[in-house]
Length: 287
Length: 235
Ligand SMILES: Nc1ncnc2c1ncn2[C@@H]1O[C@H](COP(=O)(O)OP(=O)(O)O)[C@@H](O)[C@H]1O
Ligand SMILES: [Mg+2]
Image (cartoon, rainbow over all chains, first blue to last red; front, side, top):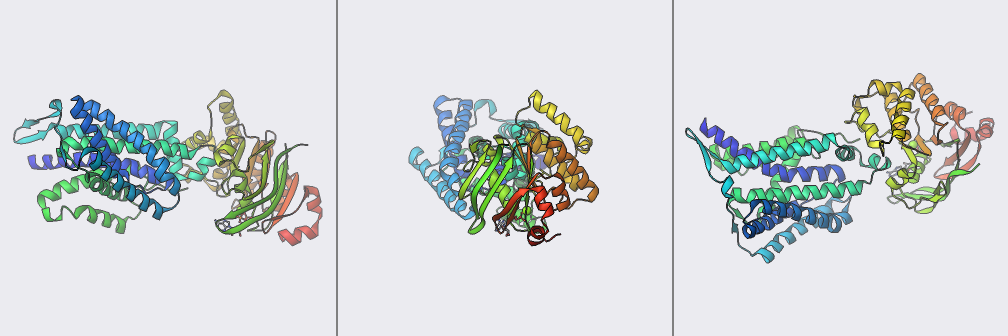
């Protein structure tokens, strides 16, 4: 029983971090049909800028704020310089965003050095709770709580505000949204920047969890993010949460029970979804 | 009377295809101007070009005294044109209420009053206020699409084949609605149903193969059996 709870907590925490990446990806894809492989670069930049300001200021909160700001600024630059010229062309999008991903990754090494950087959990989130035989690591609970809270906030924005309504309408029928007088490109820029900020925040939260940041972590997580977007249904926000949790849990349980499958499990999940429900778990009907 | 909309020698490409090859079209303020022509003549493309969705490569489009030829679709909409596309463009997973909310630019008193007035005009929308747009009947979708285009202070409505796929009794309702909306705004109507077009249209413009063939008072077309037979296959 203790083991099950432990594995579940691990899985949920990982799932939440992946969700932070996937949320932006899925909305970006749903709204503008843009495949953004540079998303992992924003994740790693958030992690590094956050970790360095955290070390410098000795405040985890400052690190988080800087990571979010980095995400917003990099998101703005990426949309304007990299994405804008390739609207409507998937092949070009994949090539240029993958290229930009590598640039972002190498720039990390130039700016922050080529080696991984160790990161500590802030003292007030460090340690664990002991309940009988069960050890609950506080920081993992912190990630799960933050993840669900962010989901709640985003869910509220998407479902209860005008801008959220416009985003949902845009995902269903971009052209009609424009014909009703909405500057969809500006809405998209906002969504893109928020998606980038979420990814950057994900990177920063990831850092103390794994204990180290390194330039290639962006690519690794971005791939998980894309798998989650496909499983959850391209463009579906709720779907990305469900799929992220699924991928997180599958990873955590497989690593324990069937370790030789733990690397392949996400691919297997994605392949089964593509075979049995190619539109993903949730679908967004295009109008 | 002054023109609310004027197209001069408008040409449009869709990818490499030269779809509109010379459209001249005028809509007078306060009137219903009907665009006619057989299937594939370019009526829908003409409306989409006016909206900036498939921008014109040549020629000019003036609306309300302003050159809108190169403007973005949202700017064109905001300058006062409401668009009801051929497929209605309903947001299927949004409720009727939410569909209206997306359309409403500013929730001023005037707009909310207009919405109330529209819901009297289309009682079905009020009845199914919380229903998802995708679950409405064809006629109700048409009503919702017109309500969305009409709710802001639109000076001009572009309506693409509103009778398409509807039962005769529903077509009657749509006609009544258009006649009512005409009291408040100018209308460009694409319509294949000649009975409907001739009843509510003031003027006509006939297009064929992406070019304007003829235009004039609706009465003249009603009497011109030869023109009707040649371009509309009726009469
Ligand atoms: N996306 C497109 N790609 C290629 N050809 C198109 C496209 N849309 C319309 N057309 C062509 O343009 C012509 C005019 O179409 P349309 O404006 O829809 O005609 P109408 O509304 O009068 O029936 C047709 O020959 C149609 O096949
Ligand atoms: Mg048509």
